[in-house]
Amino acid sequence: MVKTEPIIAVKDVRKSSFFYQQLLACKSEHGGDTFEILTSNGTVVLCLHQWGEHEHPTMLSATENNGNGLILFFRVDELQTIFEKAQALNANIEREIHYNPNSLKNQFTLRDLDGYYLIISE
Image (cartoon, rainbow, N blue to C red):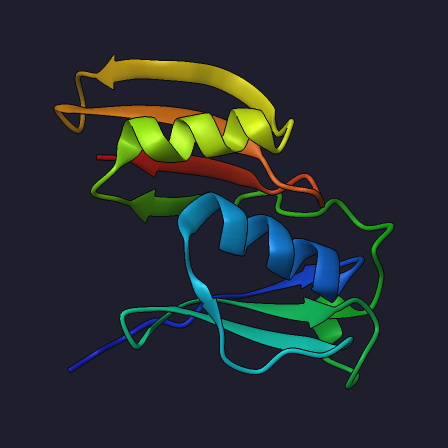
């Protein structure tokens, strides 16, 4: 079995944790200023790591081009509800709900607080 638990570097772990918890209705399993684990139904969805902590070479500097080559893709049950939550959070929505003929699903795209590109798909 292979399972992924993505970790992204963020400027403010607490604020980013709140953003993702509100957007995706996930739960904090760790909390704190330097590292967070977010889960949904006991499964890790995303981990947040403070820039510059613990000397990980790809997370040393927030001045680098954050997220270049990375898409955080979330498949969800309640697309409309999550879209409305994104609007309530004043999230930077790059494209509203639309049909993607490649995935044959409805989706929308937005940026998180650190500029990471998110696709939320049904």
